[in-house]
Image 1: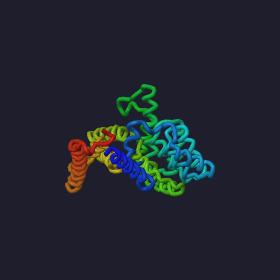
Image 2: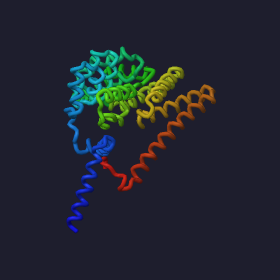
Image 3: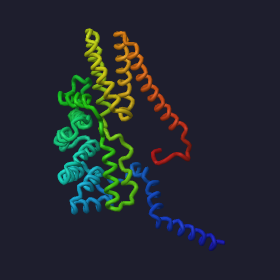
Image 4: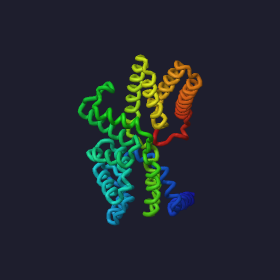
Length: 320
């Protein structure tokens, strides 16, 4: 009986190990372990994995700009990531957008002062470089323990960066370009590591401070508009309110709840102004827009609550 049991165990173990001969199974097994990387620190954030190290060596040897950019956005060391990004852009200036991806990841390091003007020239209508510049100023202030309590107390450079962001016509985090680059490099180097394929998927691609900075600056615009409105300058007030509404629309889901609150307020004030001017149709339009944003926010909150409240033990994963 004992021999039979041992033989059965050995057979099952061997059969299980044979599954690892199949590339698809190896990939699936790797995916199942991804959630544990951050929890147990199995990633060394200052170093590359052996596979990425191999890609980096080949990329530098072959002067492969795309592969260098691929490694740069995944490197855990800010200095090395910046060096690889600079090398990639030197080889192919069209990859300058990689500067934005690396800058968003690390937030504050010396190269950002050089990269932001280059990004502004490369994509002058994009708000992202200005948000990156504002965040670096935020972090420098925190490091010096000079945290401003009001928007007016922020340095002029921060105000200029936020004003430029709100005047921009688009907000592109280059995520589409990044995924296309990832696909080409993974195919070129024959990687079957799914972790590298989806690395960075779960992010908005905006600076950490973006929503907070945007919300604070938006509130200051609303206050300025209110002051102008009190003085009888409805046109000036409308311009302030509309600037907030347009930027809130541009940020979309990445704006999170803080920016959505100011977006709703901007719509309400635009509606009130329209009503004062006797334009009831326009007032109703703005009220409808405010209701749509409010309903979307309530649905998202309800979904989040139901997701956390109804999880069974079988649905728990490493994040718990």
